[in-house]
Image: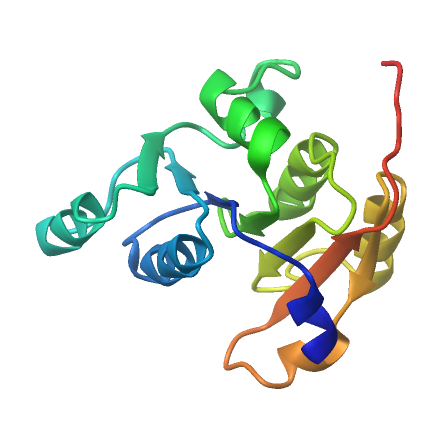
Length: 172
């Protein structure tokens, strides 16, 4: 885990807010590092007390957006979501749409937009409906390697963490 501390992960994008409790922890981490936190979900399920806490944090923003829009509309994605991932994302937390291979698709589509070597994709409920080799091979094609395997044994949840080690340029 000490190796993970070498990264300055201050700008965080979350796919899948749901109740916003986990989000708040990510938001505090971003704020303590002088960064921003942007969370996206297709509906706002946060309770009023949670919304009030968020409102006290100027660096935390919730956005209504369908993170799977790219799959439904032939590659078109929410422009605000694309902007935040492409421009400033150090850590992408993938926790939306847990059916089939949707989280792998999210990691692939949004991971391609991440330009910074050292950026992290953090996947919740890992590996889900996708085999570990498929995760590793798929994300390798966009410059990410599977890292920090020991972290998942120290949490009460199953997580997969991938680090960008090279920027892959596609002309498509």
